[in-house]
Amino acid sequence: MAPELPQTIDQPRWLDPVEMQAWRAYVDTVYALQHALEADVAPFGLTMGDYEVLVRLSEQSERQQRMCDLAAELRLSPSGLTRRLDGLVRAGLVSREPSPDDRRVMLAVLTDAGYDLLVRAAPHHVEGVRRHLIDQLDRREVEALASAFTKVRDGLLASQTQQP
Amino acid sequence: MAPELPQTIDQPRWLDPVEMQAWRAYVDTVYALQHALEADVAPFGLTMGDYEVLVRLSEQSERQQRMCDLAAELRLSPSGLTRRLDGLVRAGLVSREPSPDDRRVMLAVLTDAGYDLLVRAAPHHVEGVRRHLIDQLDRREVEALASAFTKVRDGLLASQTQQP
DNA sequence: CGCTATTCCTTGCGACCTCAACAATTGTAG
DNA sequence: CTACAATTGTTGAGGTCGCAAGGAATAGCG
Image (cartoon, rainbow over all chains, first blue to last red; front, side):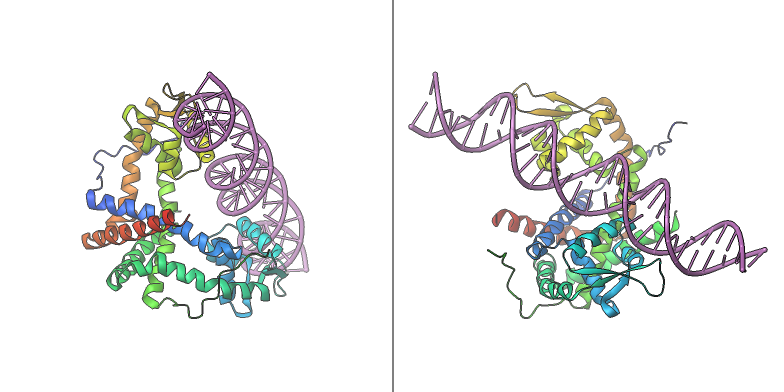
């Protein structure tokens, strides 16, 4: 049985110049911004992935969270989170503890060293977000960005949870 | 010599609610949009990385390009491009040919099969960009997106080429 | 209660990327 | 012309991630 390719689209609605400029600027910005933010946390020995883990854990009461909940928040596969925690545990920033309530569950716990590092790194990360993105825009543009991308995100999430 | 951590930032300028909403919506949108676009080209047996290669080659005269130029355009390391081409060559979409002008150089050449596949896949990709992003916004928002992200991108590129 | 289905985490495997090292070729200075 | 430097592409090693499979524990239904 041959794989079925999508049907031909007879009249594709190509992007006009302004739409194309918006699309290209978006793609380039995403790439450059990701690398700039990685560079901002790299001096602390962190990747952005590591940083996100520390942030989520610090926001939890007791600074701990179930692996599965953490994976869902980070949009990471279970195996991906397991291996990312391996590195953070090795660095002493997070520790693993079995949950007393459910013996299937492992809790990721932010250590004091992890919290201290986050406290030092966070201002630099926020400063980077400001310098690279927010401060490049005036107030009206920031509001437009928030409004527009909230719409786009909600549309994307709706189409994802609907189809499968 | 111990690694020097960045100096402490005394008064970080945290994000206000609107800025935070803009930032979170941006991050979520980037993640969801990337996966949605991957899904749009996956039925053709392509990743977005593969698709980008086909697009760049199709835009060149003779549908061919030097590896190093292609890598620069795709912001890919030389080794990354070598291995991506391996897959495309195996699929018969691209072929490698030594350059007649410079015997160090390998040319990536889009085959007829590669061009045909691109012609079939491109409308679906554009349709995805429209459906997921452009058509979710009104004309004013698309213009604002183009203007704002062009500024941000140029700022990022300037700070990258300046420092190192 | 007992059996099955589900949840949770880990591990093997493959895909994909970068960096460092390398060989081959070309460019350039003396 | 020769020797040294720069460019180009590939390979090996290492890192990250997702999917599929599997073992352990819990939840739910008869």
